[in-house]
Image (cartoon, rainbow, N blue to C red):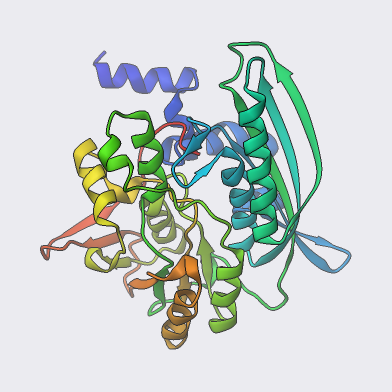
Length: 346
């Protein structure tokens, strides 16, 4: 058996880090192991949040666990990451986030000063997003049984009436929008682990709650078809999923994708495709062409969306692939990452 075949066979028998990367291996784990045992109508949609009808009111319900290493990084920390992740997952489902639950798993030996800073960050980020931490739980495990601190957040929000969001509403001619630069979070965390102090000083994570930016987007483009925050699996993961799930060709122009020079340099230095790298304060949206310009301007009016741009369109072809036109005029197919190049970044 070849080395590659042996690795694939091993991945079928045990969990590896790549199963957590948000790419093809994550999809296989969910599809083959989770869904057959747990599936129901709410779960089967596999959205960023489940949308549930409760007495005629649509509520969005989401949960997320943060295991980032290190706990603090340029631009944020595990607390800001945890609150932002829950809020943003609700927002891209068209929901106004209201309440968050907070679960903390602390490792014996964790500095109380670090914990104090993280909890202060949680409080500040919740206030920024306009949500309340309504309930929580704390557990402590022995040394070596966790990496300092793990955080779980669940969130509940009220879905805005009249929105029709989903892959099934995307149509040919629709415009693909992105709220800002890509790959900043993943590379900021990765470089914090590397001996690259000069470059590290130029990079900060984009981690932030973007529910207010998304509210502006919805007000400017009330017929928005689809939204998602490109976290694990990066922009490539969302674009590939968009093409596959709609069945249409998605056409994207590399020159139109916003990216900081320092981030691009870091990706090139480490041999990483920036399209595969996680973001924690961005939204990708698909809107009707007649509402695209207003949507971009609305996002640019928010401090988190200054570099928002239209980066592509939904094509007529029904081949379910995403095609990127490169900056030198060539084309390549965008695929979901198979595993995970940067573990423990969210």
